[in-house]
Length: 262
Ligand code: HEC
Image (tube, rainbow, N blue to C red; front, top):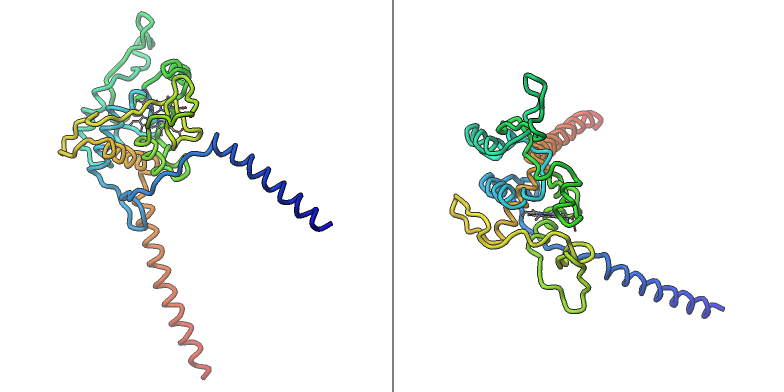
């Protein structure tokens, strides 16, 4: 009797193991490597120069398809841009002007535009999600503001994804308009490799390799997802420091009080 139960148990385990492998080969992606982000650890902080380079990569490459709706031009000051630089960056784009003194928002069916200002959101590449899908063969380029928080192991994942495009292995069924990337669940993504060497020219002399640009834009996306990361870490250190001193004081008081009982 017991032997039968064992056989049934092993058969069930083998069959379910087989099916979970089938699911894996369709859905699970390669695990990204661990990168040494400057924001890692209790004392982690942003590298302002890297953030500026990352903004450049976002602005010159990714912004063609992806928005960062949660960021306003004025927020770029936190990365070390001066008010004048921000004025220039915002002024280089056009935003809908809103109603003029006659209440009109459109002229000849075209929206009336004005140059961007520091208080404007960073402009989105498409008017809405439908327009975004139409321009990308049906796929939606997601907003990147919170991307490094929205995915498990976000920063490492984004960097692995950006640098992970390669030739599909033989036997892999790549669908039309898709690109092989082992870090994306299912192994194929509608985004083509967005970065190629020297895609941008850094003004600080850093060499614009794919690896470098990917790290810089990912660091920038860590910032867009959590601009207050440094304050959070500083507060954490203060709290721990306070708790250590407080514990020591309590201990001293306890000894004082109990010493009278001797
Ligand atoms: C030509 C348009 C285009 C450009 C340029 C582009 N992307 Fe994408 N991206 C897409 C599309 C489309 C998708 C959605 C893919 C899908 O659904 O299969 C996407 C998806 C993504 C994702 C989401 C992956 C996920 O887990 O859902 C990330 C992250 C991403 N892009 C980052 C970037 C970064 C960073 C840049 C700039 C270096 C960039 N993209 C440039 C079109 C683009």
